[in-house]
Amino acid sequence: MAIPFSYNLRNLKVRYTTTIMTALGIGLTVAVLLGILALVNGLRISLEVTGNPRQVLAMRQGSTSELVSFVTQEQFNTIKFLDGIEQLDGEPMASHEVVSIVALPLRGTTEDEGNMGNVNIRGLSPMGLRMRDGLELVEGRWFESGKREVVVGQGVHGIRANTDIGDKISFGRGDWEVVGIFNAGRSAYNSEIWTDGNLATTDLGRGSSRSSAIIRATDEAAALAISNRIKEDQRLLLEGRLERNYYEEQMSSAAPIQGLGIFVAIIMAVGSCFAAMNTMYTAVARRAREVGTLRLLGFSRWSIIGSFVFESLVLSLLGGVAGVLLVLPLNGIESRLGNQLTFSETTFSFQITPESIAAGLIFAAVMGMIGGLLPARLAAGKTILNSLRGS
Amino acid sequence: MPAAIQLLNLTKEYRRDSFAVTALNQVDLTIEQGEFFCLMGPSGSGKSTLLHLAAGIDKPTSGQIVVLGDDVGRFSDKQLTAWRGENVGYIFQTFNLIPVLTALENVELPLLLTGLSRAARRKHAATALEIVGLSDRLDHYPRQLSGGQEQRVAIARALVTDPKILLADEPTGDLDAASAKDILEILTVLNRDHGKTIIMVTHDPQAAKHAHVVRHLEKGDLLPEGQLPEA
Ligand SMILES: Nc1ncnc2c1ncn2[C@@H]1O[C@H](COP(=O)(O)OP(=O)(O)OP(=O)(O)O)[C@@H](O)[C@H]1O
Ligand SMILES: [Mg+2]
Image (tube, rainbow over all chains, first blue to last red; front, side, top):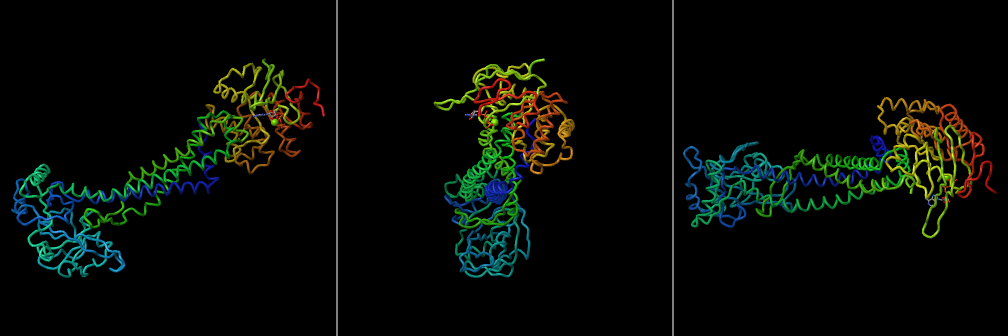
């Protein structure tokens, strides 16, 4: 039988200041890791749920985003009659859309405070609206065709100023009135402002060319075929890709943050390991005579190692739990991330999942194991006599 | 019945680089079962070394140690641990209780290595504490006990596995006269009524009076019976 756990738990309690300090250090590391995971998760969810697997996004060849793409009326007319396109009320499900950006200050600030962020403006047709699933009007009403009206995604509404109903947003040739707030679930559309496609196109002075075309195929295989047809047609000079893939590519904007975050977490983890190790070395040195006594009473070297590693594990898991508690309030908080590809920002909410909590706790446990192993080996490696002498 | 402890031409040297210290020099000694044996001698004369060897926590340079008929030198570390648990209880000058465990839990520790149930362990531990007169202190932590009480808990812990031999290294060295007297009283009872062989190291001539046999060490040499170190 092993040395009782209460021996370790009570020792942690007896030196509670050290325990708290060390656990907090580990907790901060776990918090950083979880924060990063929550951000990446939130962003991934936001971008993953955007786009229908049956929809194809067509843009000019070489365009990385809708913002820098052109699709002429002629091109749109060609692709909207391709085979395999879903029909709705006798019309092909295709939407010719214009995308632009408008800079808005953060909520509660004004323009000259330098808190401006670019928000996507999307001009789309009634068919375009019908091609987005899960839309929901939260407040006000949808924009009317031919009127200078916009509806604002909930994500934008949450963090950007001038987006309340009745506010005026200025782009193109003048002001546009906010008439509604819409919710597009957790998709990237939540980070956009939508308006009438025809009016926006003329207003933005783009002649008959818009930014992109979205087409819905009858099924996923047809979607793939359509995207290939568009790509291969030499006259079109367009690129077709699955809408889903497009938004997944946008995830790359999270890569640097994810990389940096994980880098910081690793450095902190090494630090936390040393903190745990230091704490455990001190414990081992203080309790050398206890170790000698336990060995003399018949406890094996392995039970000594197990005991100290267990103690370190409890210490680090305490830290892990503290870390989780520290980041939990972040869960669901709206945030935003500028995107290098589209120049506009995506709003998303931090998502702390059970998986990432488990990952954080395992991370803490690994730190504790590593931090505890060397001191435990030192304690167990000595002869009984040397331990008893406290040397 | 084998002798409790037999030391045959036992020598222990500590080597440090060039010079060596002879802690025990060709010691021959037989302690019979049931004896209360007292070992005296000046500081550094090798008393603790002798106890360590008898307990199997140190290895002799040469010679043989036979405890209850077993040649301790032949045991592997693992066998030694098991053997020690069964046959030898060790009592320290500084008690060496585990501070975060209660009196009862401290005494229960050695029993965790046996197959006893929790209830049986508790019962044995409580009995051992009763023998040393601490039935009313089961749930006290070491820091809540006096030195004499701590040493009594330590004796109960050495006793709880019911070993034949108790080794005590200056068990009264850290205690006031009254507590020392209590401890010696307990050891006497354990020897007389419970048949324990006791080997006690002490500096205190009063303590030595409780023993049947008193022998002296001087610079590693075991002096003949009745002979005291010079000076
Ligand atoms: N680990 C060691 N390394 C070197 N020398 C040692 C070691 N342990 C003991 N000695 C030496 O062996 C001799 C006997 O030591 P021991 O501890 O047995 O003495 P003692 O009789 O118990 O003394 P005291 O009454 O002070 O406790 C001493 O000279 C001591 O310095
Ligand atoms: Mg000594």
